[in-house]
Image (cartoon, rainbow, N blue to C red; front, top):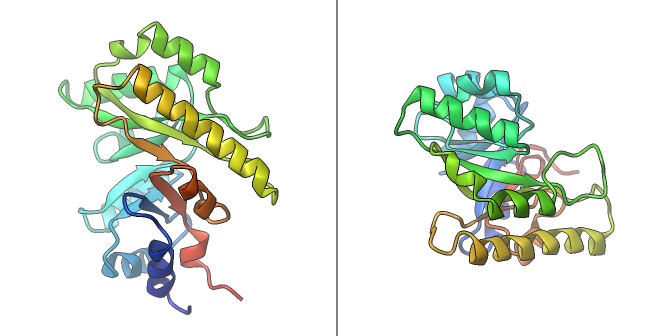
Length: 224
């Protein structure tokens, strides 16, 4: 498969109905993104604020941008006006700052976010523990954030070739997602997103209930 279009279509064919593809376009030039855009794709993910803002200004405005990287609070104001969803909300402080920035931008504005969960056996990765989110939701602390719409969870598995371990981590998050949906969000139709799966493990993630897969390398990089 020699072109971005061919690789993009190949990935899409492997996805189940209802699973959306976030094409991770970080470090890619605008011409490569436009090739995917011209192939009909509109959902892209970036992990650096400055790069995202530059691409937003230069590229078509019907692109749905998701922020998928670790987010510094002092850069929120730059992306709040146009980003569709923030996947990587990993602290109450960040939640509070997103809510504050969204309110400052427009009192009626609500920005979609995913709670990033720590499921990997790697301490350097970010995210809430299951216990932290249980406490946060049980105490109804989330209801004070009027300008935030919690639409699901995000997680990254351990970087390993052990498929059983990856499946165990994805499954644990999928079960926790279902628990939260039934216990706290049963009346909230927007709580429906489970963002798991990247180039190395997206097929396994889809088996485990992913609704959003984040793939860049398998689309933009030629395979030997």
